[in-house]
Image (cartoon, rainbow, N blue to C red):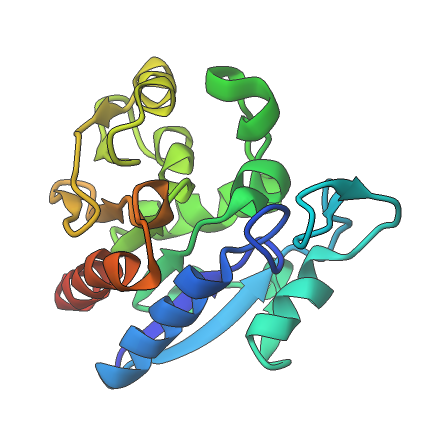
Length: 215
């Protein structure tokens, strides 16, 4: 039985992990007979967004505690993730990736990745183990893999340009499809970077998870 590590950036599209994407990733893994373990950085999230109004609000929340909502409490601090214990890595999207796992939301192509996140992702890359990145999460790919690595965030010109400026080879992609770099064993899909509804996001995520487990 294959075992997959899933890294979450909190809970909620505007300040954490995109809930639909995270749940779809876990659902497709489970349906394929794979085991998974969720992880998240144990640190304060960048800010808190009221998901009813879309406005920032006062207060502080912890990325690990928020991500535990999605994982039903079955989650571990990212510091405990060891690539040797898993066959593959999977990262759903959401603004939490661009705000909590890295600072792409604020610095674009000059973004840096949280050291724990970078170390975890690089461990899978170094071990030549497959990794899947959804939605905005592929902006991490050029920081994890050597220059020229292929990936996609869909078709948004600004984000695609930043991906390329960071050293990646961006490939335009429909919401229902995936882009695979077979050399580095990394695969990505646009998900809610393009999806108009959960069904559209599901198609690409389903393909990504299927291929991830095949790799």
